[in-house]
Image (cartoon, rainbow, N blue to C red; front, side, top):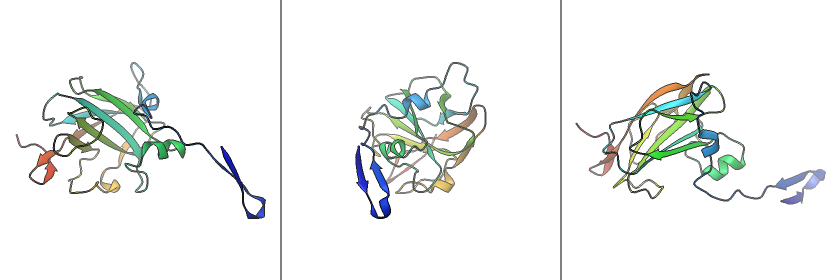
Length: 170
């Protein structure tokens, strides 16, 4: 840690950065057997197939924090939870949240297992199922409420469609 002395005798302590790892948020997101506390039970709807992995992440429902780098959220002590499971897993998928409240949930169908969204291959969906354009959706269209016990949500998955992404036509 580094300490800086600012005018008026204020002491600022800069914490050492948290190393980047795909495991950030997993301990916070892992549900217990028969989870009874605040959590989302996420049901991905309209998946293209069952290849690869599903990555579910929970963010604060604020413009600044929605889809923010996980290291930054953890360093700032903000909510960030992650669960990764094989896409062949049974649904719904449980992900814990620290307390009842409003959050933003993302679901990545990582078909090529490279741990990042590739719009030509992978699927993406968000809580409250906003219509997707070229950028990330507005957090006010994604925000959803978790109750004091597990809350079920359906997340419609979107895949490449022309030059954008949209739910699959069945």
